[in-house]
Structure formats: C-alpha cells, structure tokens
Image (cartoon, rainbow, N blue to C red; front, side, top):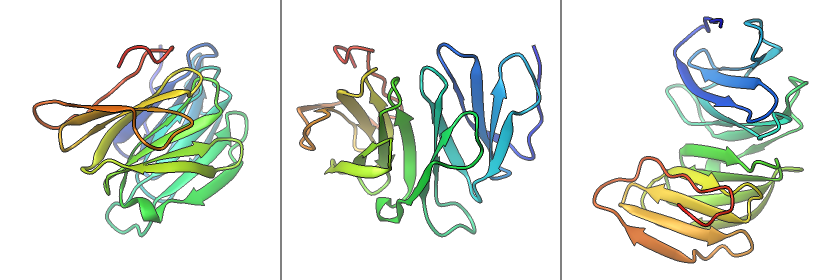
Amino acid sequence: VWKYETGGNVLSVAISHTSGIISATSKDDYVYVWKANSSSPIWSYDIGQDSIVDISASGEYIIVGSYISSGSTDDNLYFFRTNNSTPLWAVETSSCGNLLDVKISFDGKYVFTGCEDGYTHLVKASNGTELWKSYVGGSVNSVSLSSDGSHLSAGTSNGYVYSWDKGNSSYKWKYKIDGDVFSVDISDTGDYI
C-alpha cells in the first residue's frame, strides 16, 4: 500500500480491471498514471484545468475530459495510451457547455460524455470522431456504457435516467426519478441500469 501527494485536491480516480493501472486527476491540473505496485507515477500530463478521468478495463487507454473552471475557457477530451504521456488525440468540446462526466467502454473503442447543456456525445475512441450527440434536457451528470459500448445510459439533473443503443442517437427509453440523478451505471451486458 502506498500514497502519493498531488499538487492539489484529487478530483477523479480510475482503476483498470485487469492490469493494475491507476489514473487520477487533481486540482493542480495534472493527470497522473501509476502501476498499482508503485507510488512513483509512470507519467503525468498538464491538462491545464480541472478534469475527470476514466480508463479501459485492460488499462491500455485513458480518457481525460477537462471542464470549465475558474480561469479556463474551454473543455477538451484527451485520449492516451497508458504507456505514453503524449495524447493520441485531443478534441475541443466547447459546444458541450460544461463537461460533467466521461466514460470509456471496457474494450477502449468508445467514449461517452455528459454535458451541462443537456447533450450526450458518443465518440469513436480510435480518432476522436463524434459518432452522434443526443439532447435530453437538464445537465447530464453521469454517463455509463456496457462493456462493448453497445448500450449506454445517462442520468440528468431534471430527474431522468436515459438508455440508448450505440447505433442510434435517439434514446430507447427514459425513466423519471424523484430528484436529480447524480450517478448511473450499466451492467457489462447492458441488461441492467
């Protein structure tokens, strides 16, 4: 067991399912990556603003979403291989409003984002191309994908849980919850939310 002190409060942590890779973002504007057996980071990268992180199940890929905070001007997505601190790609998401959540599918092929402006975005992880976006209204506080990215879900500030199939930007269904939905998760197969 070990600890590591970043230059600010930790904002987000992700742990791979199979390879012992850990990633975290901090108020110091950096994303950090470690092997679970060492407190020395493999690498760190200055995102330049507050951000959130997710990691593929194998630990091969890391997605970082920066979001508008004091002094920053835009949102961006950064996609990394775990073994290299140079992003494979970075795309601006300023049309998103404020990026609130980002997830990568277990297989590392898809990225799903939730935004304050009420949109979700499905992105092809290999190159950062947006496959579709869907407006649901209310801030999209939380998003989730099934293992292969074929089923997606989101929870919103207007009290709804939404479900999509990967191939269609129109949601399959929505369900009203009393109050804001701050966290949503989906089973590996997409059968349960």
